[in-house]
Image 1 (cartoon, rainbow, N blue to C red):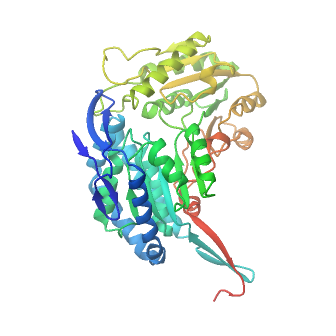
Image 2 (image 1 turned 180 degrees about the vertical axis):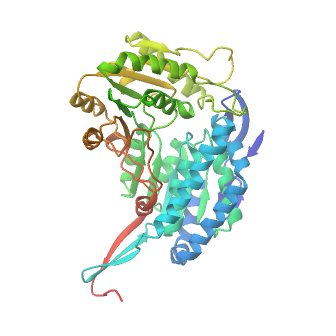
Image 3 (image 1 turned 90 degrees about the vertical axis):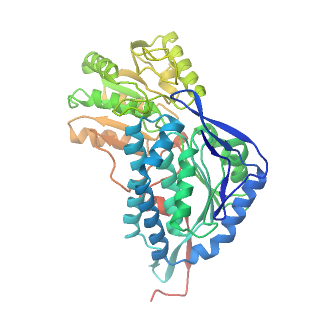
Amino acid sequence: MIDKRQFYINGQWVNPVVANDLTVIDPSTEEPCAVISLGDQADTDAAVAAARAAFPAWADTPLEERVALVKKLREIYVARRADMAEAIRAEMGAPLDLASNNQWGAGVWHLDGFIEALENFEFEYAMGADRMRKEPIGVCGMITPWNWPMNQVFLKAIPALLVGCTMVLKPSEIAPLSSIVFAEMMDEAGFPAGVFNMVNGDGVGVGSQLSSHPDVDMISFTGSTRAGIAISKAAADTLKRVSLELGGKGANIIFADADEKAVKRGVIHCMQNSGQSCNAPTRMMVESSAYAAAVEQAKAAAEAVQVGATTEAGRHIGPVVSEVQFNKIQGLIEIGIKEGATLVAGGLGRPEGMNKGYYVRPTVFADVTPDMTIYREEIFGPVLAISPFDSEAQAVQMANDTVYGLTNYIQTQDDDKRLRVARQVRSGMVETNGVGRVNGSPFGGYGQSGNGREGGGWGLEEFCETKAISGVPMG
């Protein structure tokens, strides 16, 4: 079992001020896999003080030197791919192939996107007779989730480092091991002491302490809408910037003229990472004339999704992250049945042959109506809800009938209709016909999906203040 009860503060590993140990559980076995410590106020204060002291010199460090260190980090990250994948596998239950490819690969993909975005990012430019400057906002508190750990760490830490911010990272206490490995990589890369700090803790403790800390200039948070609201309230007294990437309940609108793989593609996307993605297409809406066939296709696709051990190679899905999450999903599946949705695949309990681990059966409900709980609540598990629609206008109305607005999906061979509907749905991202977003495209949503935009130039901009200088023309 891994024993890592230290924090990374001011360029070194230090013991917590007060011992407060937490056991990390491997969700595939329900057995302990590590022990960490949760930080106290003194630990948070020490990390923030280190970041504050390091900020002036790091902000003044030439951009090319900051870029060189980030590229050095990339080399180390690539070299330690297996270590990172094993940490993600053990902490949150991603099967080894998923951990080694999608989960690990998200970090490199975003880092490369930020380096490319820098080529067109203007830190200083003229606007008439004024000079405009983009300057680092300062000390940033970064609170990251357990479901895509390196995806979120890289989306926050890399742009902040590149523009000249310093930071304190608080990863999820449920899945802290990958961020511990990341801190080791930052140390090996040779970033100056205090530029990057990491303190493990929970939301009530270190999370709240960072959110309300007077010496933290910005909070960047990814997680639940409930926690995002609490962070915003905690940050209000110091008027710090708060960037939020929160939950989602994405609609996947499938018109009758969609390609033949549209339904299967939607099911697989919904089930990926055991359904633990905020941008998952969890509400499938199908044009009535194609509805019956789509339900059968979804049933077949869900029943073909394999659930297996995280240590085995393959494209199967693993467990959900914790007992709490498992019980929540089981409760919502039960509610779906009681409220009258038609269960066409999966259902309650673990998959056949499994009696240990937080494994959930890939589940599909049909005939789901807008008044049902599973239509409205983010389940965050491998559960799909299918509903029919009669017209384009009804499809748009149904897609927008949610407090969330992260990602919607549209499937049709009619390009005019695809663009027309994409313009009407209320979400920060729209993916059509199975085509993913390009690297550097902004990730973020509307409404209770948050207010941040991460990735590429938008992600760099998130960590900058804008200064206008008059009377000093550009040379």
